[in-house]
Each structure stands twice: as structure tokens, then as C-alpha cells.
Amino acid sequence: MSLDRRSFSVALGALGASTLLGSHATAQPAGAPIKVGGTLALTGPLSSVGMVHKLTGEIYVDELNKRGGLLGRPVEWVLKDDQSKPDLTRTLYEQLVNSDKVDLLIGPYGTSAILSAMGVAQRYQKTLVHHTFGVPPLAKYDQQFYAWALGPEPEKTVPAIVFDALAAGNKAPKTIAVVTSKFPSVHFISAGVREVARQRGIREVLFLEWDFGNRDFGPIAGRIKDADPDLIWGGALGLEANQILDALKKIDYAPRSSFWYAPAPGPMLKAPEANNALSLTIFEDHPPFTDNPVAKHFTEVFRERATQANLPTTTVEVQAAASYSAWQIIEAGVNGAKSLDNKAIAAWLRANQVDTIQGRLRFNGPGNFGDDLSRVKQVQDGKWLVVWPREWAAPGAKLR
Image 1 (spheres, one colour):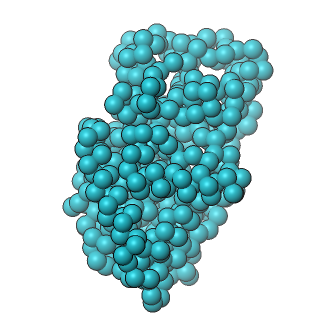
Image 2 (cartoon, rainbow, N blue to C red):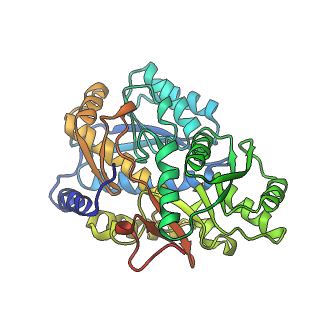
Image 3 (cartoon, rainbow, N blue to C red):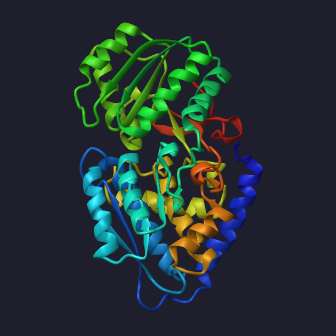
């Protein structure tokens, strides 16, 4: 199920009125701070994306405290660097619960790290709101909640929407090369791509895997060139997509069409060889997403702060939107339950929907997942533009 544009506009209109206007009518928070604990990949292979989540969280907490905090108390974000290491993530979440005595948990970034954090949350019966979990069948804990709305079966729905976009643009592939990291979420999706492609009569001419952390993509580029597919499906994280495209450029091969699951958004925009590359999104910095005042305000503040911080990406897209949504879910859960009791917050979230900048989220499906709100975007002349579904496309944009 997808959220139609009219419902989205109505939902965001209500969100804008209650959130943006409420900031002018709320008393300053007082009392002991409410601690929200989490980790992010501030160093290591995932740091280029982790920094986007860090800046988003800082913006949200600053503005949350300006409009009264939570339950009338200020909010403090206790953030630690997990160095892109799931084992370290587990240790740090133990510290957050037992040493830092945090009230609530958020994050981290990346499915492997989220699984580590989820185990700790379950041990202590803490509610965990996470940004970017990509393997819903592994989400067994009933007090975990997603922010990136992929739905309960992204291994089916994600490739379906991408193939639908290509078909609608008269670019339906006859052959596909699936090249993927063994990182759990992208590997899970890539396995589903192979099955969906087979069902649609798309012939697989190459399937290659690499270990997470690999930086030598020359041999993979050579195999892609030899296979010469209509579509490259890249199960890539962060800078891996740029590295593959650069390796292809070095051997004088330009893909006819390519899709990259979770690239580093800024570097992809700056690479000439990435022009017309496709990816997945839930929000981009253009209408209709920015028709709402809350979303528009966030994109403006993020652009200003990201420029000051010299981040490679200064516009809001899927990563920042998922992170912002996670904080919106926490705020809604605490205010809805009128409590910091983690079980009460979880119960409220399962029974209610939350309006976020990407759309209205529900948590009453399998594993607390709701609808897949994915859209397909494309790099077009240095900008990410949504091209499918058509009602979510940037003004005047269409698949190239």
C-alpha cells in the first residue's frame, strides 16, 4: 500500500500546524533532562552517512527543546561513536542503559548495528526507534519501530517499484547484473531482486558479492563490463557505489542504466559518471514533499547547518528524512503515552499512526512494520529528483 499525495498533504498540513506553530506557544522546558541515548557510525566505512544522521538529530533536539522539550523537560541526546562496528555497538548500548541511565533509545545507522542495539533493548525492555533497518523478518522484538518506511517485504516491493518505474519510462531491462555487498540489508534486498527479475522475465547475466569493507572494485567492474547488462542493480552502501562507478570509468565502460540501493547522497551527486543513476527514497528536497512548512523549514535549516559543517551533502534526502522521522516517532510516542514508560510508549505506537515528513506511518503490521512508502529518484544534472510514482515526481521531472 502507498500513501496517495492528497492524504500526504492533509497529514502534513496537520503536522505543520501542530508542530511549527506550537513552537511559539510553549513554555521553556525545566527540570532534569530526558536522556535519549544512541550511537552512530561517526567513523569507519559508514561515517559519510552517519554524519548526516548526527546533524539531523542535533537539529531536531535543538528545535524540540525550543518548543518545550518532552513532557515539559529538556531533552539531552547522549551520542556515542560505534565506528561502524556492530560488536562495539552492542557494548555502547549496554553502557547507555546501565551507565548513562538513558530514558529512551534511538538509532543506530545500518542494519547490523541496529540488530546489535535491538538485542540490548530487548534485554532491558527498552523501546528502540531506529532509522534504517532493511531486513524486517529479523525484527522479532515487539518494542522496536522503524523510521524508513520500507514495509514488511522490501525484498519484493522495492525491486517491483524500480522495475515499474523503468517500464513506465520505456526503459524496461531485458538483462540485469546484480552486484551486492554482503551487508545484511542490501544483500537481503538483492536476493529478492533476483527472484522478482526472474518472475518478470528479466535475464540475470551476472551475480557478484563482496565483503563489507571491500575497497577494490576493479575486478567487479571488469566482470560488469563483460556481462554488459541493460541494468546494474548495486546493493551498495555509502561510497561503494561511487567506487564501482569510478572503477567502471577507468575501464571505459558507461552503464546503460544503474540502480544503487543506499549510496552516499552527496558524493553521488558530484560524480559525473553517476548522472542518471537511480536510487530509492522516501523524501527529497522538492515539492510535493516540501509543500508542508515543517518539511520546508527542516530542509532550509539542514542546508544551512550542513554547509557550515562542510558536509558533502547539504540537501535533505532519504537518510536525513529517515533520521528526522525517527525523532518524530519518539516525540509522538512520548506525548501520546504521556509517559517515559517504554512499554506504554510502544503500546501507543502500535495502536496509533504518526505523521512524519515522509508520510503517515503505522506500526500494526508484521514486526511492527506498515506500508512501503518508497519512491524512485534519479541523479539529474547534480540534483536528486523523484521520478516515480508520477504523482511524487519533482515538478517537470521524468525518468531519463
